[in-house]
Image (tube, rainbow, N blue to C red; front, side, top):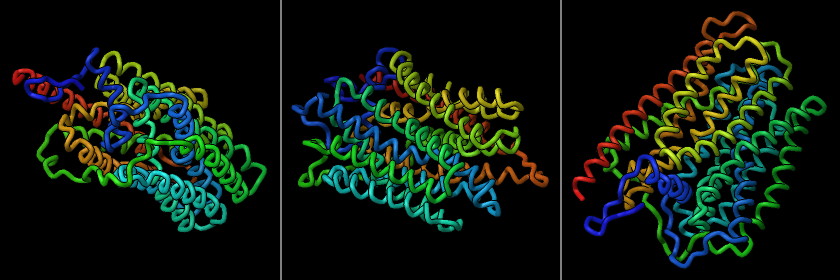
Length: 452
């Protein structure tokens, strides 16, 4: 961001060309969580850096891919494997994994600063792969919760922020593109693992289906390790001792920070709900077979790739806030429109639209945070605090929605109305809250312009 010689205060850009720099810088802010800045003579791109993008893409495909594929597991557990366990209880498996992934990312940022990237990469990959192989041996709910929820979440938490931070340190000019490619590994991984599970579960036992997914994960990490680590010189400095602090108490007095955090919390309470329950809805309410219902999740994940890239492009042209507000409110509206879906064709159309607009909700929030908190001395701490609070939304959102299914449920027929209204209304509320954030940031910019 630019600054003036007179005040040395960062300028605030909310739209148009000024926000282009914010959109590019935002990738670094979330990636590094304010790790040690790039030295002036650091290389910008090059073959080594793009190989790290490829390796980090694979890492993201594993750690987020299994998370996005959980909707397939959710429906299988509900209807076949854990039939005596209700949908809300089952969803805790996926939400605990996501919660630990995000919360662990907040703590792993300083470890990256201190030079422990290699250790975290190897340990995280080992723990996640081990969790998949242990899952193949599980038959009881508590066993699955520990393996697929707790253990996988702990391993993923070691990989999340450091994987992005490595790419963020390797680029300046093309950082936004590199970060966008890296994060697209998440839906691609979700598609692959959903397809593998769907194609194999009809011919093999649950144990061998999951075991093969574990072998795929192990092989992909073996490919990713040399791409990421070979001759890597941007993995932190263990002798520097420089790390961002984790907590900033002055944030509690900052209205833009709380508005941003509240908006994110509300949006992410509803964000994963459709992904978790699409497959079971297709089978129970629309009479689709398991394969067709699971392919609906794949369509949504594929559309989210388009949404992520399209939103990044739009943010560079018109600013972050307009696409963010539009996508949040639109996602909520589509979730409510889910109520009217009564045919498989309409269901597929809904899934594609929801996936496209909701996909943009992942890359956009960090891009505006440098404006929410222009003080670089506390930016990392406040971003970590915001992510930590937001992780609780990912933890409780889907179980609440799953519990609403049991209201007015008769026999095998389930009532998804409460789930659909909860997911939609809470995201719309989050989008409306973003409008208040937009107003606050505009006023903040105007106030600073008067002080310059």
